Image (cartoon, rainbow, N blue to C red; front, side):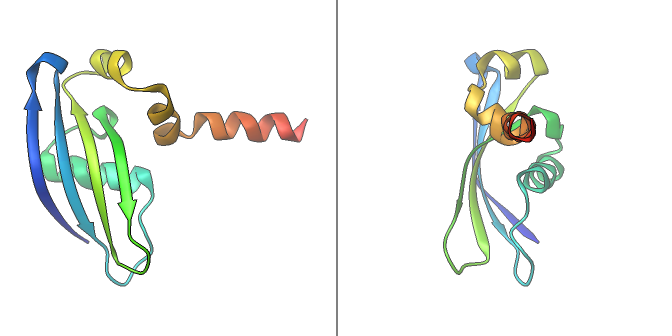
Amino acid sequence: MNIQIVSDTKKPLLSRRDVAVKLEFAGTTTPSRAQMKDIIAKALNADAKLISLYKVKNDFGSSSVSIIAQVYDNEKTLKTLQEKHLEERDTGKKAAEETKEEAK
C-alpha cells in the first residue's frame, strides 16, 4: 500500500491536526477503517487511538481512497470534540448493539 499525505493543517485551538491522505491499495481489497487508522498512524508517528476518520471516499473501480482524518493531541480532547456518529463508525459499537437487540 502506498500512502501520500496531501495536506496537514494544525489547529492548536482544537488540539488537533486535520490531515488529508490518499491511500493506494492496488491488487488488494479496500482496507477496513481500523487498518486505515493504523496506516495513517504509522505515517504520522501518531497513536491510532487518537485518530478519527472524518471522511473516507472510495471511487468505484479505483484502487485508491481519499481520507480526511483528524489527529488529536490527547484522548480527553478526542472524547470531547469528536462527533458521536464518527465515534460509532470508528468503533462499530452501535452496529454491535443493534445486532444484539435483533438477536433477542
